[in-house]
Image (cartoon, rainbow, N blue to C red):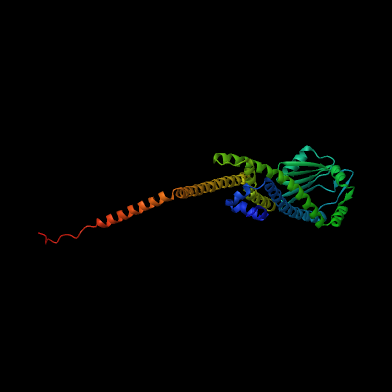
Length: 333
């Protein structure tokens, strides 16, 4: 099988299910492994961006309905946001809190009380800024900076709804998908490349322990393929987390452990194949020596064969002559 004929998805299948074919990857140029890395990370980023965009657009659609039907009137002007009343809103499906208190005086005690209400995800709208809280992460965004960045002027509830309708949900979704894809690709590329280096170093150490003469390039080539199943499982895990909120503290350990097992298994299989090849070569060499010996002394070998045949014939006759005679019947007395 020529390396250039191995398609991407065939490589994925070989990397996951055909460890005996990893020897093909050993002798390839490292640039082939790098291209495989970029492509699998791109597919991972696209799938994750699609899932995340779908989840976000569900929230956006629900938020639009909430703004249109339930949210009190509000207005923004000159860096200040004003709601007509204080708001406490909670969505049980997404575990999201939205709190709005745009009064002139919001004490630190009030702010601490609002933050304590948010157990998972929440947004707090104050007069001059919003606070986004996700678990232990907390970010502040002054309205003036957001308005300057996106060129937003004064608006009210009705003008905001009209703007969203004029843009359209499909346009918002496409823009969000592109943004998430790019950011996800960059993040995943850095994270997986670091994992690739870690697995490569482990492969070098494992090869030394197994007394295998494998260079860093060999280990570098096979390590990205050993990570393939872990990357696929990571994609499924992140999809499950985005859609269903599934989370486990041990996934990172399992992620690396699977790659380590693949590396060790591949090295042992390659070593076993080399031992078999050496044994076959040794047998071939022995046969060649015997043939060469016969060609050098054909007369002597022929005499030796005749002697062996004569010896075998004598042993056969001797065995036949040793057959016991019939027992005496007593007439000899």
